[in-house]
Amino acid sequence: MNIDIIDIKTITTEKEGQLSFFEADKDFDFDIKRIYYITKVSEGVKRGAHAHKNLKQLIWCPIGSVKIYLDNIREKREIILDNPAKGLVIKESVWRDMLWLKSDSVLCVAASDYYDADDYIRDYDEFIKYAGGVI
Image (tube, rainbow, N blue to C red; front, side, top):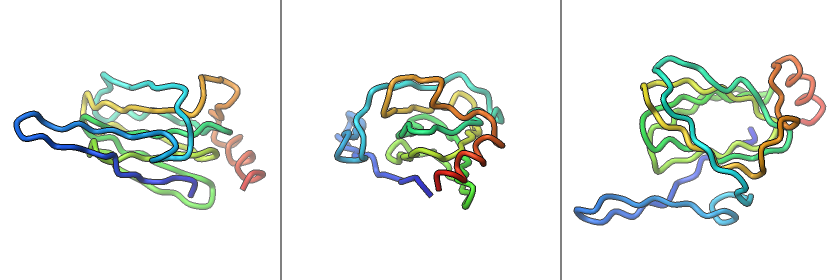
C-alpha cells in the first residue's frame, strides 16, 4: 500500500514536557506546502471519504484518537493514530476515511501541495476506476 508509518522525533525534558518534530525530505519524501488540522469533531463521526490523485500527506494525532481506514483497491488497512510520536504518510491513490474514536481529538495534516479541488476523488466508484488504471 502507498503508505508509511513514521516515528516523529520527540525530546523529553524533565519537568518541561516534550517537544516533537519532523523534517520534510528527511522524515518523508516531500516538501510541505500546506498544514491544516481538524478539531471539534464528536466521537463516532466519520470524515474523509476521498482519495488524491497526486497529493502526499503526513497525518498525525497529537491529542486523542482517530482510526484511519485506508484502501488502494488491492488492500485495505486500519491504523489508529493515538500517539503524538507516530505519523502516517499517505501517498497518492489511497482512499481514506477517518473515524473519531474520542471527542475533540485533533488530526493534523502536512500536505505536499496547495489546495486543489481537481486533485480530489470524492466518489468511491470513480476512485476504483482511477486507481485501477494507475496501479
